[in-house]
Amino acid sequence: MSFPEPNNPHLAGVAVACSEGHFSGGRTSTKIRTMLLGAICVCVLLGILAAGLWPFHAPRNEVSWLSGGNGLFFGKHGSIVSAGSFAANRSPSDSSCSIEIWLEPGRADSSSSILAFYLPASRIVPLALRQSLGDLKLERRSPKVAKINANKIYVNDVFSRLKLVFVTISSGETGTAFYVNGALVKKSATFRLSGEDLTGQIIIGNAPATTDSWSGKVKGLAIYDRELPPAEVSQDYANWTAGWTTSGRPDTAKSEGVVARYLFDEGKGSIINNQIDSATSLLIPERFFILHEQFLERPWDEFRTGWHYWKDVGINVAGFIPLGFFFRAYFWAVGRAKRATWLTIALGFAVSLTIEVLQAFLPTRDSGMTDVITNTFGTALGAIVCVWSIKRNCFARAGVSLVFPLEKRESQFRS
Image (cartoon, rainbow, N blue to C red):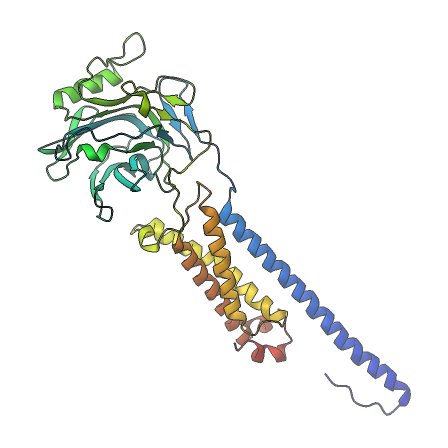
């Protein structure tokens, strides 16, 4: 704005004063807007850090003894692990083994790990038992070939009623049979287990290398190095669930081929005894844990085909758009960044990488490169939206002056 030269010399000083006051007020207003924008940037950054690192520590392990009988209750973040590892005591060619587990899921919409065997040396999960909504899912991966795709099989409607179920998985030369409450529900001639599948440490209530918590009750577990015939499966179901002796224990007189038997009848303490071998008793840590936490897991290892994966991708992109938008505007506001867009994207990458590195030390969070990629993309998207908004005079049309005088925005937001 310019002021005409006044004809009256007495008014000259007034004009100069008005001019100086106008520009002084403009500088003050711009400074206030810049400070406000900086405060918004700080709030956005703190919000992202809080969302990415919460709860900032390992929570208590939510595993407790049942008050109304034998067994353990697993909460939102709870898991137990065997003190030692199970070794293969049979020939790899011998595909005879069995698992019995008595449990009750806490949620019908859960897709999570119930039980897994884990080999720490090779970081392989040879066998995992999972709840997939109302179905039982069994995953087998060869301990000798780490990169081979897992062999999977589903048993429908095992957990759909949210009641106690006694599940038996018995594998032999003719295939694998699945029993629920002593009755045969499925048999597969192509899906076979071997003694090598039941090796390593046992983790119950979570996955070995990522947060995949299962909620519910576990009241019994037994592992065999032989195939169980149908008659014995039915008898074991009766022994565990109905044939309790006066001492409060099921009839466990038959121990042929039993590798482990956990009755969950201790009622207190942090140890669940293996009635066969104390070296593989189960431990209840005080804090929730991941047996082998992943560090910046590779994107192709993190990839999943389910809806939850793409939902997480969308959240990670959207969560960093505000950072890209407001920091892009702030860097131009302070007038010190010639390449504000690239500087903003670099900041988003650095913030995301810092969060993912720190998440490797938090058992409730997963550290992976997929989030770094999606967060950086979200930052770039936010910066682009900021440039587009200013060039289109969106704020001026709305009656809002973000930071810059209107006549300077077009030239300043070209890069």
